[in-house]
Image 1 (cartoon, one colour):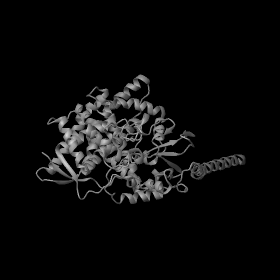
Image 2 (spheres, one colour; image 1 turned 120 degrees about the vertical axis):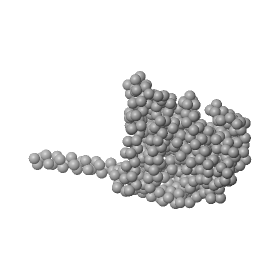
Image 3 (cartoon, one colour; image 1 turned 180 degrees about the vertical axis):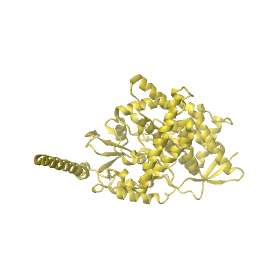
Image 4 (cartoon, rainbow, N blue to C red; image 1 turned 180 degrees about the horizontal axis):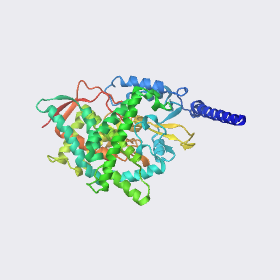
Length: 515
């Protein structure tokens, strides 16, 4: 018995020592080793602080940045990325920050970014990434063979033919929004309207219709829960990097966990109802969920393995965050830019009249909107919805003249590149859609198309970019046909990032009904 006790004690001591050693490596030894490598490579940043890194200062700077508007300018990098701007201003372009015990180095060379995005097997999404993982999973974060299979299953839902099918649902949602504005403005002359809540709801409305069709009301409920989850995450910024964060009994954490369960329950009910309808041969499956389930069934029949119920749930959640946020941002910043630059508003409206005349908008006409396409590209450049992408090394990896060790995050500074005068010229912070008159390739100063990547690039380019551009064009055509608009005196410029780049203080414009 005494021998067994000694063995048990020895095992316990060995486990505790092993756990302690691994903890020491995680919170101190590995970060210090990576810090030495970064400094040897000429990168500069704050000294590593145990466990928290730069997170306390980061949360403080973000909170302060959110509290006030920006000057009325398209030079928004310092406002939208206050902590990153602070670090880069302090340490130079070759700089890094600490996300807990993980260093994140800034990559601002477009050719290196292009290489990183093309080498998606070597440079993967960071895992785990608490901010992102708390809200979305699905195709956005899946890797390897699972990503290849999921992309194959989801791809058919976003082809040109299905975009045409979704055209009617998108048009109905846009028409509903425009009618609400007409009721606000008819017979009342110039009217101040905060257009942002309407545009935000429009994007959720479109995703609810195009993703869930007949389950539209439940779709709206998902949209509301997802918006609340993003707000709650911002309340928990400081504790996000702490292991076991979801068990910390704060009010925000409790509500977040309740929402996770409710969201899963709502989506399970929608998916099971749709699967049953497909099995019974009821109705056409012409929305994203129906197409996804049909494609998944085909994959299982042909290869034996497809997406699980959990996988389908995560893809549905991704429809909302990626689909609605990106498009609503593009539409609202287009309206703001056209309010600031009336000459381009007039040119866009004249083109719409030339293409559609007094007819209703039709799908094939969208491709003839050259001026509107130039405008949208310039808005995507200045107010890119996703302001920064991150990748990570999971083994020692060669990039340019560096060999990056495992465990380093790379921040692909999209917004900085879209605002770089060496790429776009000294007028980089001016709204000049004409820079795209000969296409994206010729818009940069001989740098090709790689510095312009609002929907990412390489194998993992955004699967929904054509849907987003189609929705933005339909919305802007309907708005420009019926209204002229300008900034209200109460407008506060506030492009501050959440997952994307919404106007945190709204978008107060003066609408004039043209009917």
